[in-house]
Length: 444
Ligand SMILES: Cc1cc2nc3c(=O)[nH]c(=O)nc-3n(C[C@H](O)[C@H](O)[C@H](O)COP(=O)(O)O)c2cc1C
Image 1: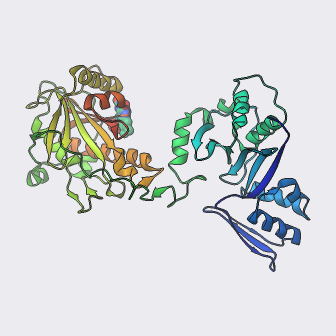
Image 2: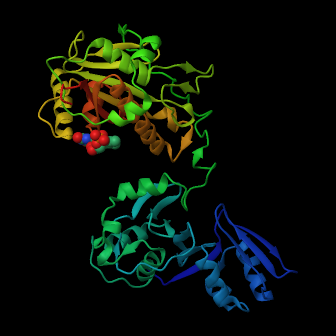
Image 3: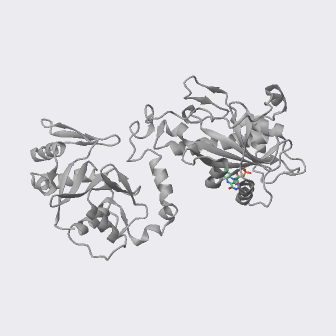
């Protein structure tokens, strides 16, 4: 990259500057920050006017009366976007997402820094950085490759400037990034997921975050309940009068609830019990006329529903082994023609996850039809789906305990194996939770 770079500055998109030249004051705001500037000099008012109306060269701004420290203050507040040019070539822009934090030392890209395609270029960002770099020119890609060790070191001119700006933005790391638990504990995708599914500097609530209904008018929302696969086997419904008589009190259920990982194969769970369990955990109580809200035994974010229950059956009195989908609208079990090795593998992996030798009598798999939630909720949809899954897990624990069955949640399962076995498109629906269920051993 040649020749030497120059930098222009302007208020970044989304920043509003209300200026009162007479009061010599200004209010800078974006969606989450505000800064009031008072006692401004004429030169500082002129700096704000220039930044609000056009891109101007940074050194020119600094030379304006009272400009230097004032421009730094605006840069530190995260109000200003800087564009770096080499000659006429726009190389990249530094785009703050929050007020500035100290530069990160080091010449290597942080492992949390990711490069992704966006409209009009590439974006280099990290949840640890206060600013993104928006890349506009392929020469920057080559310079980044050098920093990532793909070519010889030795940056000069714009490449040296790029390194300094990556450090300035917080996108690089010193050797010690992973010495403490603080950062070592995070896998990049996990820190990104946490960062992006909460309200942080990049999120604009109601614009690209939250219940924005972004897909309304673009795509149909997936239906409130999954299409039945075949005729299915009707299940007996839980009898509310009997349940009221036989259920222990909530207090007793809460005291008794434990994870039980092994089952009594001499007296296996019956199809009647499985039907009652599914009725009390997954039966659809009501769907609104527009299909947007579903009432279930457990709450879901915005009543969007979208979780499906599958049963991998090894040993159930009255039911053949195999993989079944539970139709919560019709209260039926639909056998799926899953290959036997896949079923054995699912049961085997579940036993491994639970650290026991015996496979469960039933492995309940919770899957998500992602579009039910993501059609309405932007950026935080997957986080909500996992929260819904946690709510359902707890309900399954309580119902199983009340029914004197053996429950145990699992932390992980093979989503690809499940999608193949159930013949699902994993981008549309895939497993998000696994749960062991069976008869309670006498001493359990
Ligand atoms: C989200 C979640 C994931 C879990 N994952 C597993 C697992 O993979 N294997 C396992 O044996 N137990 C798993 N458990 C069960 C916990 O180990 C158990 O709840 C915990 O040890 C407390 O014991 P208790 O349920 O008997 O009170 C999980 C529980 C939850 C809530």
